[in-house]
Length: 626
Image (tube, rainbow, N blue to C red; front, side):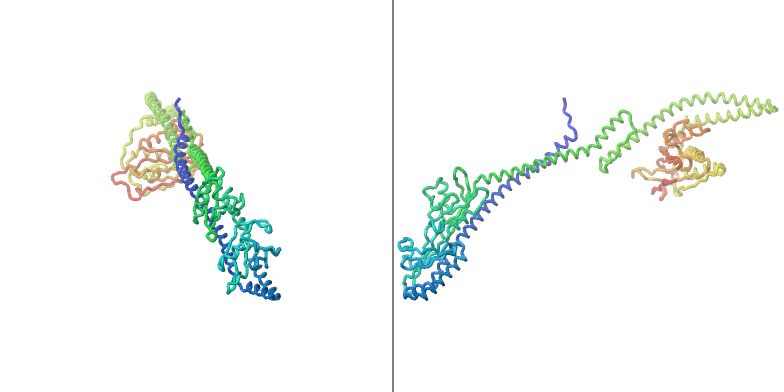
């Protein structure tokens, strides 16, 4: 069985690749570009967060260093030491109050400070100010190794302790200390800023990259000092769970920034790191590689969804387009099948003004022409058969009529004195003449000769016919109204045949107005609907204002012997149609009850020796209301 492809399927097979291939190509490259852009943006976001956080932590320690230097250089600490040395209690108390206010101002400006202390040369805390406002108990620190290290560091040294757990803070602290000496190198004491390391850890924990990303901090020795999963110094270069982590830490300890991939707990990760130069530390933000894959998968899914949506819309659009576009074609196919079956009565409605609408209009014109041609063929067949029959019948009728006519003449001569014979032979003679005239028309219809074309003034033919019926028209109160083109050139027609056509149509128009009225005549040349390379068409329009022809009779008016008049033979219009058609023309009739009848005769204009005049050649159209 051979599969039949419909036009809709062909459209789908043609349009879908044209639509889907570019969309798939654009989708693929968009997917690749989106993946690269997402990876780049995530990395940029990761690096930007690491850089900003590292700079923030570095600023905290830089500020701490500045504050420590500023406090150590203030003379009020020397004044406090001298007042205590000379037991000037009032002056010592005054200086102490000034130092407390000073420490409190520094703590209020730097939220990362837990407390600021002043330790005298004997290792005893003399002043302690905390961020919470509590002073806390003063402690003995003389035996503290860190105290001894600070005391021996010299006048310009700042010592930073390792991260230690503080019970007072209930968290981790870092001690920043600087010794104070007088101008004579006399040791005055130590200023200590206890940095709240929990604030640093909170800053590190605040870095969030993706859903499972986090940040961690390592010191200059490669030890982890801030991590969301374990405390400071729990892991170092010697005990990292994966060698790739140690490679990452080595890269971070070089003091630069960059990217590094590693494995942790069986998962591939990517870390962006940035140095904290003030401390020799390095901050890293890490994100699982699976999140990149997940984001890529989401992009791929979205691109695929868009492609499928466009594909679905394309299928629906092409289906609807083909349905509505091909509906006139399907109507044409259906109408063609009906025409093939002999039905020429229905036309397809024109629903659009595009090429399909033009095709539908042309098809309807073709159907109308086929119906007209079919009617003409039927009528021609009738005329041919009728012509053959009429020739024989007319011959058979005319011979007896001649004999009857001779007998009546002989009888009238011999019985000239008999009034009754004269009366009845006169009646018989009139009827014989009438039958003879009918037979003459019959033969004329049956033996239509080819037109003998000569240059003829068509307007003159119409005026001559009006002169013939002028008296009869006056008696019947009928007026002739002329709109004849004065520039109408002489046309090559058979004047006798064309005059017979005009007379037949004029007689019918007069018979249609028993109460009188007006008959309008118009002539002209028309190029309406005529190709530029073809000659203009001559036109004669005869319009009466009579009773009109019923719609049911319009199709039969050109049939031989069809007549609505009691005395009519029904041969006038068929004879006129035959003459016009022999000139290559057409006769169109329009009629309605109460409106009258309009007959339009058109034929290709063939000019005489003078040719068309300028105005006539321009295409004067006699118009509609002739």
